[in-house]
Length: 193
Image (cartoon, rainbow, N blue to C red; front, side, top):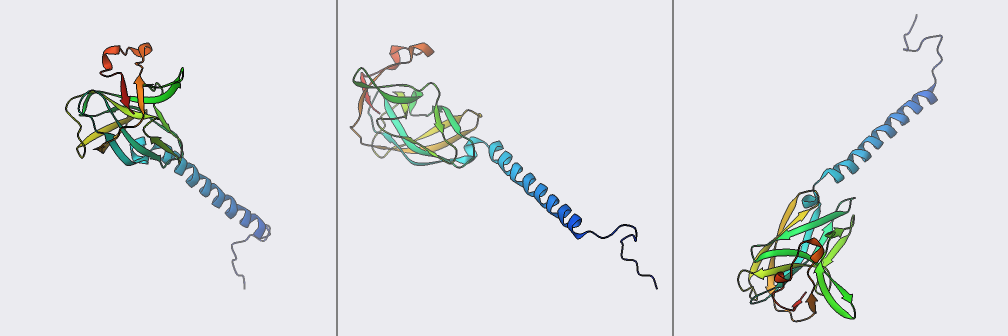
């Protein structure tokens, strides 16, 4: 009686070799899934991975105002906001507040707002903020306006900011003459940003 075991009588059965093959296949599968997850995370648009909270704008009758929010990046890659727009103003700029010659000033932020991987960027009075230039109408307490952010990958996301009374952080506006900005953009010598 001859029973076929699937093993040739000339080739001894080696469980260690079979186990090694199974382990190698499992490791390869795991690495492919892990790599594809990283690639998928990077491939998702910034608008898909950045969430916005605590959004608001400073109430103002005319001239300039500012919007603020917390931006949270839920991806493995830093994301960058490169511009913003809003129907509330003729022009909207990304701004930073810095000390210059003992005076706090605000100016356009050339490189935009970088949001670190799995981190946050706080847009707040006295810091980085979204500047409304030449308000189209009064932005009164309780009113709402939309703000659209554009990321360096071309994706966009929009949030709604409610206007609040705020009188702190008076800074001087310094236009960015190196990037085609002019003094005409400054309606008032200072703003609350």
